[in-house]
Length: 141
Image 1 (spheres, helix red, strand yellow):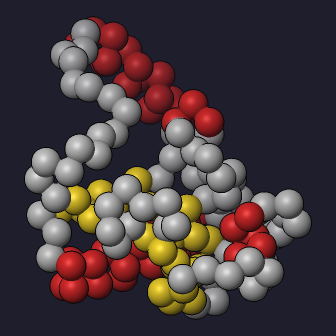
Image 2 (image 1 turned 180 degrees about the vertical axis):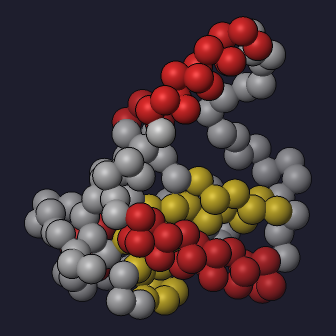
């Protein structure tokens, strides 16, 4: 699997070793490092080595490799930091809060009452609208 590069991308620069990071692990297709703007202590990123901005354009194998790296990091966080839980967060596009347009998965250790929030609240949906959207999406699959 080849790894496309964007010379202006901060994560591509980290992958290439042009910008230092607190590296946790690296393999053929991914790198994981500590987030330098952590939500909570231990916040890390699993990053694909190739420059694909979002989950809808990345090759399936590269996304799977990135998810496997996120899982390895999450297991280490659970063992060593013993959080109350953790989030795996993967944003796609600025409307979803993606700040670096290079696919990455946040591994966020969580603690009860830590104040960290995701960007939605639960509200009951219209079941007829949900059913109609389900049918549209099934056709698109």
